[in-house]
Image (cartoon, rainbow, N blue to C red; front, side, top):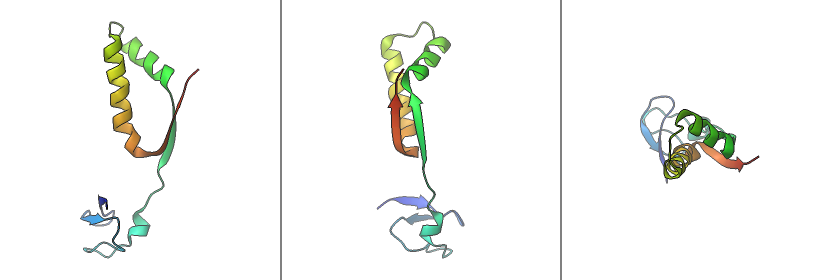
Length: 83
């Protein structure tokens, strides 16, 4: 069971409930299709290196781990591509 905020009234409700207990808005009407994002990991790392040229390999790895831990939950599928 996951909790989320009703898009109509903002109250926290369960995703298992048929409708918001506060305003009656159907939960199905609140479900939004999640985005699919394709990330080129080499471009992402090159961008970080150009911004922080003296960064260590450990800092670069930490940055990538941070990016994926923050962004992964926003997408149904996260595809990582390389050149």
